[in-house]
Image (spheres, rainbow, N blue to C red):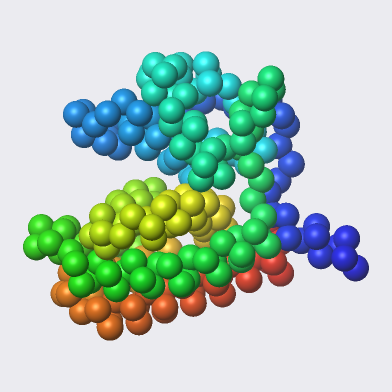
Length: 247
């Protein structure tokens, strides 16, 4: 029985330990402004490729392959890989290269225990401390989330979610909560992207994100906390449902 349960908790398909074809994985050059640092650009490209499963769980890659595929030099790629490793999105295997980790439901549920408490603090702090220009961007993101949900546009949603997370961390102005949240956001996005089509979840999750963004834009601390709780209730229920739902 325990063995059977463990099998259910691992949700990634078996993937050969060979490098994937990355010819099309990094074709979109519109992810950051041209003035962005190369390391940031490398991180954005690799993180999105992992989250949107262009780099599949279980895939083995190399620094040289990622540099060639993205068109970014080895030093920025190496620095981006180190950051992704800290966020548990890449495993660095000495003398063996890089591995995209498998997706594990039990680990995701432990992650949510941490995320729920800290993200509520971040959202409430952002509602309290955001500047006028940040509130304008939160309002724009609320609209963008709604549009992505209505269009069922998963890639746009993932990009909005990443920007929303970064903006929340900046507006909260708390370096300690920021450090903790950076460890969970990418893993959460990848897990959601892997499973969301089973639950047709995009319109719902987009609407919940829009509610949080709107509350922060309005400087409504209580509403931001409440909307965050509703969002994480949905994410937790979604996560638990994957245990019983086969791929």
